[in-house]
Length: 105
Image 1 (cartoon, one colour):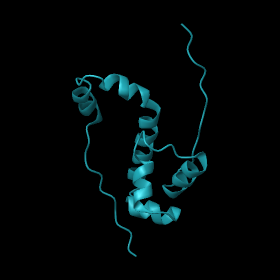
Image 2: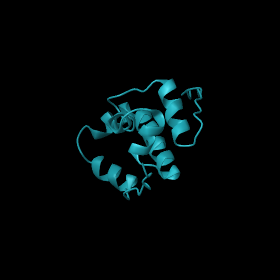
Image 3: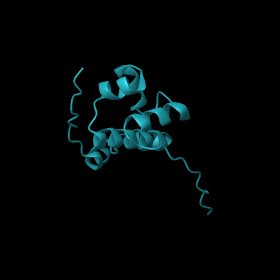
Image 4: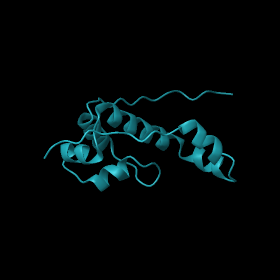
């Protein structure tokens, strides 16, 4: 099967957050899932840099496009480290995890 070149749809993340942030309860809900959103954002950026579609990543990982879609969405699905490592390899990356000391007041 010929591999399709991924063409990302332009998305202004800052404008989206500014508009969504005006909605009641959004800030609290976003803050609760901030880490998940950061991981999803990193995944999408890595896939975009690799020029891969969800189908192509799924094929490299031996899974389905819908599974990749779930991985790239924040909040409802918490992927394992093993899955994140497989995803990283599929998009030509290395997974790095670090624990950062919390700032004290």
